[in-house]
Image 1 (spheres, rainbow, N blue to C red):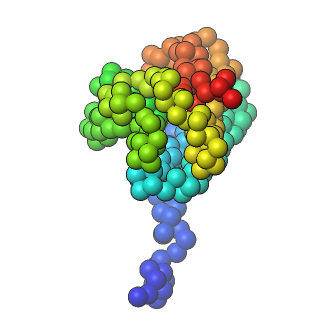
Image 2: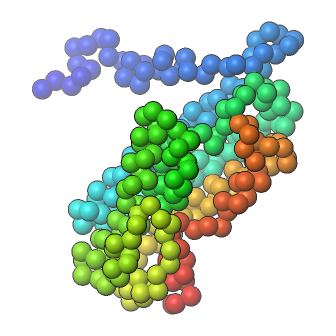
Image 3: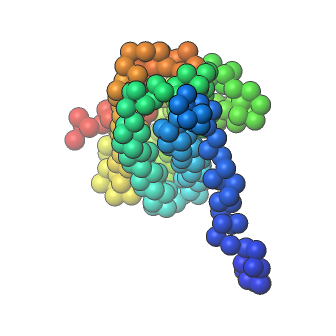
Amino acid sequence: MSLPFENDDDFTYGSYLKVPELLSLQQCVSVDPDTGGPEHDETLFIVIHQVYELWFKQILHEIDYIIVMLDGHKINGARSHLKRVLKIMKTLVGQIDVLETMTPAEFASFRNFLANASGFQSAQFRELEFLLGVKDRVQVEWFGGEEGDRLARRYESPTLWDSFAHYLHRHGLHVPQEVLERDVREPIVENAELQATIVSHYSDEGLAGFCETLTDLDEGLQEWRYRHMMMVRRTIGTKPGTGGSEGAEYLATTLFHPVFPDLWAIRAAF
Protein backbone atom coordinates (compact mmCIF):
# COMPACT_ATOMS: atom_id res chain seq x y z
CA MET A 1 0.00 0.00 0.00
CA SER A 2 1.43 3.38 -0.96
CA LEU A 3 1.50 6.31 1.38
CA PRO A 4 -1.00 9.12 0.62
CA PHE A 5 1.73 11.51 -0.50
CA GLU A 6 3.51 9.06 -2.83
CA ASN A 7 3.04 9.80 -6.53
CA ASP A 8 0.82 12.75 -5.66
CA ASP A 9 2.43 16.11 -6.34
CA ASP A 10 -0.65 17.86 -4.97
CA PHE A 11 -0.25 16.32 -1.50
CA THR A 12 1.98 18.81 0.31
CA TYR A 13 2.56 20.18 3.79
CA GLY A 14 0.12 22.97 3.04
CA SER A 15 -2.59 20.75 1.57
CA TYR A 16 -2.28 18.15 4.36
CA LEU A 17 -2.61 20.78 7.11
CA LYS A 18 -5.06 22.91 5.11
CA VAL A 19 -2.78 25.91 5.68
CA PRO A 20 -4.46 28.26 3.16
CA GLU A 21 -7.86 27.56 4.74
CA LEU A 22 -6.41 27.92 8.23
CA LEU A 23 -4.82 31.29 7.48
CA SER A 24 -8.07 32.56 5.97
CA LEU A 25 -9.97 32.14 9.26
CA GLN A 26 -8.60 35.25 11.00
CA GLN A 27 -11.30 37.64 9.86
CA CYS A 28 -11.28 40.92 11.76
CA VAL A 29 -14.48 42.91 12.30
CA SER A 30 -13.03 46.15 13.68
CA VAL A 31 -12.36 49.34 11.74
CA ASP A 32 -9.47 51.66 12.51
CA PRO A 33 -10.82 55.20 11.95
CA ASP A 34 -7.40 56.41 10.76
CA THR A 35 -6.57 53.67 8.26
CA GLY A 36 -9.97 52.19 7.43
CA GLY A 37 -8.52 48.73 8.03
CA PRO A 38 -8.92 46.56 11.13
CA GLU A 39 -7.35 47.51 14.44
CA HIS A 40 -3.85 46.04 14.65
CA ASP A 41 -4.33 43.97 17.85
CA GLU A 42 -7.53 42.23 16.82
CA THR A 43 -5.53 39.70 14.80
CA LEU A 44 -3.62 38.65 17.93
CA PHE A 45 -6.89 38.32 19.85
CA ILE A 46 -8.39 36.08 17.16
CA VAL A 47 -5.29 33.90 16.74
CA ILE A 48 -4.92 33.32 20.50
CA HIS A 49 -8.54 32.26 20.92
CA GLN A 50 -8.58 30.07 17.83
CA VAL A 51 -5.48 28.30 19.13
CA TYR A 52 -7.24 27.85 22.49
CA GLU A 53 -10.11 26.11 20.74
CA LEU A 54 -7.69 23.80 18.92
CA TRP A 55 -6.01 22.88 22.22
CA PHE A 56 -9.41 22.33 23.86
CA LYS A 57 -10.20 19.92 21.03
CA GLN A 58 -6.97 18.02 21.67
CA ILE A 59 -7.54 17.89 25.45
CA LEU A 60 -11.02 16.43 24.94
CA HIS A 61 -9.54 13.93 22.48
CA GLU A 62 -6.90 12.90 25.03
CA ILE A 63 -9.21 12.59 28.04
CA ASP A 64 -11.71 10.53 26.06
CA TYR A 65 -8.81 8.22 25.21
CA ILE A 66 -7.63 8.16 28.83
CA ILE A 67 -11.10 6.90 29.83
CA VAL A 68 -10.88 4.19 27.16
CA MET A 69 -7.49 3.14 28.53
CA LEU A 70 -8.80 3.00 32.10
CA ASP A 71 -11.70 0.89 30.90
CA GLY A 72 -9.09 -1.37 29.29
CA HIS A 73 -7.09 -1.67 32.53
CA LYS A 74 -4.14 0.30 31.11
CA ILE A 75 -3.43 2.76 33.90
CA ASN A 76 0.19 3.41 32.87
CA GLY A 77 -0.89 4.30 29.34
CA ALA A 78 -3.66 6.46 30.75
CA ARG A 79 -1.14 8.31 32.89
CA SER A 80 1.13 8.87 29.91
CA HIS A 81 -1.65 10.60 28.00
CA LEU A 82 -2.66 12.52 31.11
CA LYS A 83 0.87 13.92 31.21
CA ARG A 84 0.34 15.12 27.65
CA VAL A 85 -2.77 16.96 28.80
CA LEU A 86 -0.70 18.64 31.52
CA LYS A 87 1.80 19.89 28.94
CA ILE A 88 -1.07 21.33 26.92
CA MET A 89 -2.46 23.03 30.04
CA LYS A 90 0.94 24.67 30.57
CA THR A 91 0.79 25.89 26.98
CA LEU A 92 -2.69 27.36 27.56
CA VAL A 93 -1.41 29.26 30.57
CA GLY A 94 1.67 30.41 28.65
CA GLN A 95 -0.50 31.90 25.90
CA ILE A 96 -1.90 34.33 28.46
CA ASP A 97 1.58 35.88 28.62
CA VAL A 98 1.26 36.69 24.94
CA LEU A 99 -2.25 38.08 25.33
CA GLU A 100 -1.09 40.30 28.20
CA THR A 101 1.29 42.12 25.87
CA MET A 102 -1.86 43.89 24.66
CA THR A 103 -2.62 46.97 26.75
CA PRO A 104 -6.12 47.88 27.97
CA ALA A 105 -6.19 50.71 25.43
CA GLU A 106 -5.26 48.36 22.59
CA PHE A 107 -8.03 45.93 23.56
CA ALA A 108 -10.50 48.79 23.93
CA SER A 109 -9.75 49.82 20.34
CA PHE A 110 -11.71 46.84 18.99
CA ARG A 111 -13.66 45.51 21.99
CA ASN A 112 -16.96 47.17 21.04
CA PHE A 113 -16.87 45.43 17.67
CA LEU A 114 -17.08 42.04 19.43
CA ALA A 115 -20.73 42.78 20.31
CA ASN A 116 -22.13 39.75 22.19
CA ALA A 117 -19.24 37.40 21.40
CA SER A 118 -17.71 36.08 24.63
CA GLY A 119 -15.37 33.35 25.82
CA PHE A 120 -18.27 32.16 27.97
CA GLN A 121 -19.71 30.84 24.70
CA SER A 122 -16.90 28.29 24.23
CA ALA A 123 -18.79 25.00 24.00
CA GLN A 124 -15.55 23.02 24.07
CA PHE A 125 -14.44 24.52 27.38
CA ARG A 126 -17.87 23.65 28.82
CA GLU A 127 -17.38 20.12 27.48
CA LEU A 128 -14.04 19.94 29.29
CA GLU A 129 -15.64 21.10 32.53
CA PHE A 130 -18.39 18.49 32.16
CA LEU A 131 -15.83 15.77 31.49
CA LEU A 132 -14.06 16.74 34.72
CA GLY A 133 -17.31 16.83 36.73
CA VAL A 134 -18.12 20.55 36.73
CA LYS A 135 -21.65 20.26 35.38
CA ASP A 136 -24.52 22.72 35.17
CA ARG A 137 -27.66 21.83 33.23
CA VAL A 138 -28.27 25.53 32.48
CA GLN A 139 -25.11 25.59 30.39
CA VAL A 140 -26.52 22.91 28.09
CA GLU A 141 -29.42 25.22 27.33
CA TRP A 142 -27.07 28.06 26.35
CA PHE A 143 -26.08 26.17 23.20
CA GLY A 144 -28.10 24.93 20.29
CA GLY A 145 -27.49 22.65 17.34
CA GLU A 146 -24.50 20.32 17.25
CA GLU A 147 -22.76 22.12 20.15
CA GLY A 148 -25.82 21.66 22.34
CA ASP A 149 -26.02 17.99 21.40
CA ARG A 150 -22.37 17.45 22.35
CA LEU A 151 -22.84 19.17 25.68
CA ALA A 152 -25.98 17.18 26.43
CA ARG A 153 -24.08 13.95 25.83
CA ARG A 154 -21.27 15.09 28.12
CA TYR A 155 -23.80 16.07 30.77
CA GLU A 156 -25.29 12.58 30.82
CA SER A 157 -21.95 10.74 30.64
CA PRO A 158 -19.60 9.58 33.41
CA THR A 159 -16.66 11.85 34.25
CA LEU A 160 -12.97 11.03 34.29
CA TRP A 161 -13.23 10.54 38.07
CA ASP A 162 -16.09 8.06 37.65
CA SER A 163 -13.97 6.05 35.24
CA PHE A 164 -11.10 6.00 37.73
CA ALA A 165 -13.39 4.88 40.57
CA HIS A 166 -14.72 2.02 38.44
CA TYR A 167 -11.15 1.09 37.50
CA LEU A 168 -10.32 0.75 41.22
CA HIS A 169 -13.45 -1.36 41.77
CA ARG A 170 -12.61 -3.72 38.88
CA HIS A 171 -9.17 -4.23 40.39
CA GLY A 172 -10.63 -5.43 43.67
CA LEU A 173 -10.29 -2.28 45.74
CA HIS A 174 -13.16 -1.23 47.99
CA VAL A 175 -15.17 1.54 46.38
CA PRO A 176 -18.46 2.46 48.11
CA GLN A 177 -21.64 1.77 46.17
CA GLU A 178 -22.69 5.40 46.48
CA VAL A 179 -19.59 6.31 44.48
CA LEU A 180 -20.10 3.61 41.85
CA GLU A 181 -23.80 4.34 41.45
CA ARG A 182 -23.78 8.11 41.88
CA ASP A 183 -25.74 10.38 39.55
CA VAL A 184 -23.00 11.44 37.13
CA ARG A 185 -24.86 14.70 36.48
CA GLU A 186 -24.26 15.81 40.05
CA PRO A 187 -21.08 17.41 41.45
CA ILE A 188 -18.33 15.09 42.66
CA VAL A 189 -18.28 15.11 46.46
CA GLU A 190 -15.75 13.81 48.94
CA ASN A 191 -16.14 10.25 50.19
CA ALA A 192 -14.22 9.21 53.30
CA GLU A 193 -14.36 5.47 52.49
CA LEU A 194 -12.94 6.00 49.03
CA GLN A 195 -10.21 8.19 50.48
CA ALA A 196 -9.28 5.43 52.95
CA THR A 197 -9.05 2.95 50.07
CA ILE A 198 -6.78 5.23 48.06
CA VAL A 199 -4.53 5.99 51.03
CA SER A 200 -4.19 2.31 51.97
CA HIS A 201 -2.98 1.48 48.44
CA TYR A 202 -0.64 4.43 47.88
CA SER A 203 2.33 2.06 48.00
CA ASP A 204 1.14 0.90 44.57
CA GLU A 205 3.27 3.09 42.32
CA GLY A 206 0.86 2.85 39.39
CA LEU A 207 -2.13 3.96 41.45
CA ALA A 208 -0.21 6.64 43.34
CA GLY A 209 1.36 7.96 40.15
CA PHE A 210 -2.00 8.26 38.44
CA CYS A 211 -3.52 10.00 41.49
CA GLU A 212 -0.66 12.48 41.61
CA THR A 213 -1.00 13.21 37.90
CA LEU A 214 -4.74 13.75 38.33
CA THR A 215 -3.86 16.19 41.12
CA ASP A 216 -1.46 17.94 38.73
CA LEU A 217 -4.32 18.28 36.25
CA ASP A 218 -6.59 19.73 38.93
CA GLU A 219 -3.88 22.20 39.93
CA GLY A 220 -3.22 23.06 36.29
CA LEU A 221 -6.89 23.86 35.74
CA GLN A 222 -6.83 26.11 38.79
CA GLU A 223 -3.71 27.86 37.47
CA TRP A 224 -5.46 28.44 34.14
CA ARG A 225 -8.54 29.83 35.89
CA TYR A 226 -6.45 32.17 38.06
CA ARG A 227 -4.31 33.48 35.20
CA HIS A 228 -7.42 33.93 33.04
CA MET A 229 -9.15 35.89 35.78
CA MET A 230 -6.11 38.11 36.36
CA MET A 231 -5.69 38.71 32.63
CA VAL A 232 -9.31 39.86 32.37
CA ARG A 233 -8.91 42.06 35.45
CA ARG A 234 -5.71 43.52 34.02
CA THR A 235 -7.33 44.20 30.65
CA ILE A 236 -10.79 45.52 31.52
CA GLY A 237 -10.68 45.97 35.30
CA THR A 238 -14.11 45.82 36.89
CA LYS A 239 -16.04 46.34 33.65
CA PRO A 240 -18.59 43.69 32.65
CA GLY A 241 -17.32 41.14 30.15
CA THR A 242 -18.44 40.99 26.54
CA GLY A 243 -21.76 39.30 25.93
CA GLY A 244 -23.14 40.63 29.22
CA SER A 245 -20.99 38.41 31.45
CA GLU A 246 -19.72 39.61 34.81
CA GLY A 247 -16.12 39.48 33.67
CA ALA A 248 -13.41 39.09 36.30
CA GLU A 249 -15.96 39.09 39.11
CA TYR A 250 -17.51 35.87 37.79
CA LEU A 251 -14.16 34.26 37.01
CA ALA A 252 -13.06 34.82 40.62
CA THR A 253 -15.98 32.66 41.81
CA THR A 254 -14.59 29.67 39.87
CA LEU A 255 -11.32 29.63 41.82
CA PHE A 256 -10.40 27.11 44.52
CA HIS A 257 -13.06 24.55 43.64
CA PRO A 258 -11.10 21.34 42.99
CA VAL A 259 -12.53 18.87 40.51
CA PHE A 260 -11.06 15.89 42.39
CA PRO A 261 -11.79 16.79 46.05
CA ASP A 262 -10.85 13.34 47.41
CA LEU A 263 -7.30 13.70 46.12
CA TRP A 264 -6.88 16.93 48.06
CA ALA A 265 -8.53 15.58 51.21
CA ILE A 266 -6.09 12.64 51.47
CA ARG A 267 -3.08 14.98 51.80
CA ALA A 268 -3.57 15.13 55.57
CA ALA A 269 -3.71 11.34 55.91
CA PHE A 270 -0.04 10.54 55.30
